[in-house]
Image 1: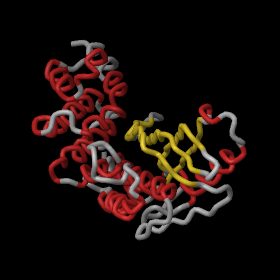
Image 2: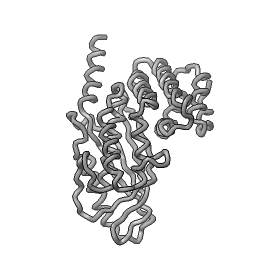
Image 3: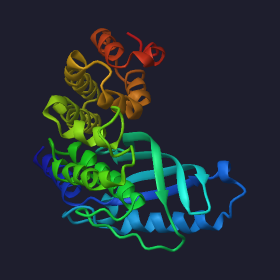
Image 4: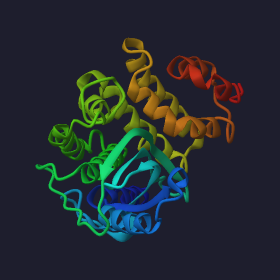
Length: 295
């Protein structure tokens, strides 16, 4: 038992002390098919190197501990002054202890992507200064990924990275790009602002309970792990009870819906009566998927 605890501790200590991105970048350019595609190949290479080679935190990184993530740009327009517009799908996952499974932790579709890029231009990151919109978007999501990942291993362990992401928002607001502004209720500003707000603290608490206290225990006791997932979802219910349809609740289920269905349709049975009530209250748009979970 002591050896098991030691191995478990070393495993998680390693992840807490060593985090970095293992990121893939892809572009869909069908809407601008007539454009010279070479600029997108150059841009893809540049963004991949920027995301994977930049040091995003003060922790020590090792290869096996990098956070797997992807940035998928859907380019809608590209004009003769090198102005790009489109959308960006950001996804990230983290490994589950004693398994080959990676659990999704983020799946965000940012519909307000706009930037200027001149082929071969350098990308310079300074968290305290705004250089250009492209660098700020990349840096924002890189820090968000590191912060959310850290939250899944340690209670509010990602605070520093989330604060860096928040500072990037503040610096980037001078661009007047609507993704950075406190207008609407579902953009980069609100994403990190809500994560750091005490009013939504249940989101980060639930992320820790769901991953570290539930999924990471599945290999030892699958039934107990499932009960841990149920507990985490009840924690998330604290947000829905006060703010139904909150942005962070949607962010959670954009990443977790299919995984939750899989967890409760496989392995040892647990009572799901209260679970289904919780899920239908938290995410009523996924009622058809929740109906796949059997009693």
